[in-house]
Amino acid sequence: MATLTVPSAVPSVSEDCEQLQKAFSGWGTNEKLIIDILGHRNAEQRNLIRKTYAETYGEDLLKALDKELTSDFERLVLLWTLDPAERDALLANEATKRWTSSNQVLMEIACTRSANQLLHARQAYHARYKKSLEEDVAHHTTGDFRKLLLPLVSAYRYEGDEVNMSLAKTEAKLLHEKISNKAYSDDDVIKVLGTRSKAQINATLNHYKNEYGNDIIEDLEADPKDDFLALVRSTVKCLVYPEKYFEEILRQAINKRGTDEGALTRVISTRAEFDLKIIADEYQRRNSVPLTRAIVKDTHGDYEKLLLVLAGHDEA
Image (cartoon, rainbow, N blue to C red; front, side, top):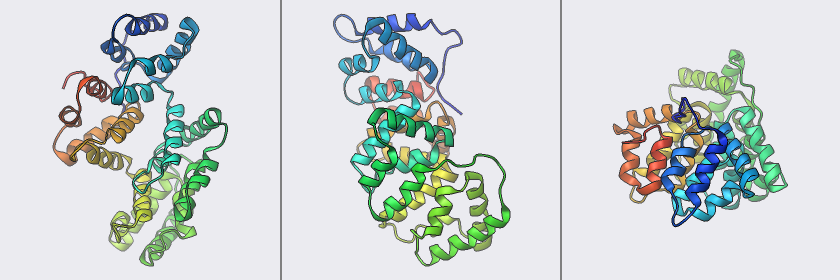
């Protein structure tokens, strides 16, 4: 469930554009007006605002925002204003340029988006960067990381509910054998994670737990210092328990000394229109604190205000 709230009576696009232009005019910027408009419009409405703003004022709205805003608030506004596919393309491109063991954004995009959302992100990548996401992933990653990430970002998974229980049983046994032998990058492991539907993977992992007594995540915690194994664990979480994956990202971003604004901004901006309510419920269940209260405690100013609006709370 989304947390984005759109008013039942939305002003005309031309009126929104006029108000945004006013927010940029004169001395200072009217950040509240920007939040009130963009923070309460869905992707289709924001796209129309961008198109109309450019036609009316001869300037890309993103460039206008970039000139007027700064810091974490600017980053959040710019990411939010982008079409979801463009946003994913931008985040993926940034990830290919600064790959580290803790940067799992490529896997996150590949595994938590629908087949069509990932396809559209790849198309947006073509349009924006004049090359493919796959070739950049191949160029900027190596070894086992490349072996797993390439099929993940290239996937177009079946999204129906049908599962093959015989295959689930066979592949559960296969995964148990490979994990027991610490063959985490084995071709068969990659094939299951990189090609099977989420429903099929879920059936396989349920059989794994029933047959071998452990959740597969537990068996993938053999070596906490193994960066590739951490990526495999996160891949499984994203495919089967995305709300738990995102809750963990948020907990690490706002429950430690020094907020990770990059991770917080990414999760709120990418999930507010899709499943942030489910993620927020998981966050409260896990931490006994509402997500919005955690945001208030760790952030401030206009950045905090827009985060709260996108999380479904204008006041917290």
